[in-house]
Image (tube, rainbow, N blue to C red; front, side, top):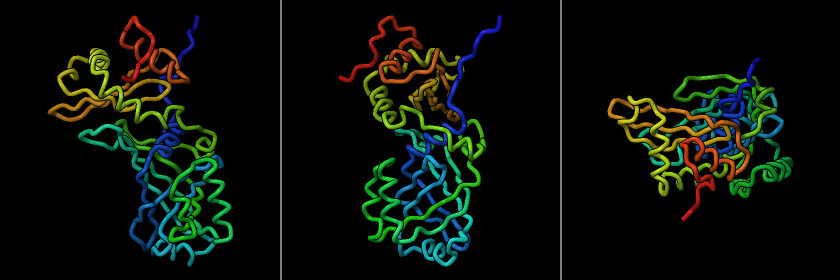
Length: 255
């Protein structure tokens, strides 16, 4: 009899969706111009990306010169760990495609549509020193400690970010500051060769928790999968306690 297998982690498309949603650090690069930081990036459900940059930038000027024909562009995003780690970047995402300017009479309408999905203070500056550009995707790649993986753009359109992406920072900080006992118990599940380093919580998602081991000979990331995917905070806390073999399954409680 064949046993059903449980998915061990998010798909590549889900990883990219979550990283894009979490990231506060992105750069837009086009030919004949230095990369420029964006004040906002939003991957829409249709698969296009809206970015906000300074109106008086060379990038904005070149985009307008190119018109609706567009320019080849790459948006690079860095996904930073919520905790102060020796190497803070967990993953990098590259979204490649064609960037076009958004006409002024369309900007406010588009800004309102983005705000409905992703409220962000930078949208208040649209038309007042900030301009929107539209990036139509051709490819997407994510890279982390395990290597680089591309994803089909159609698959990316259908994917959703992890349900815990908004709560991950507070949850991991709480675990790190208030539950050293649980971290020690999680560390016991690591191979003996990795237990000599400093173990910190690195990431959490519905499929498991990842730990960063900072040792003298370098850093290592280890993923500990849950027995089954979880959907809410109660399920997440219970899954962690099951993972460490704790008999008290009430979940983590903030002091």
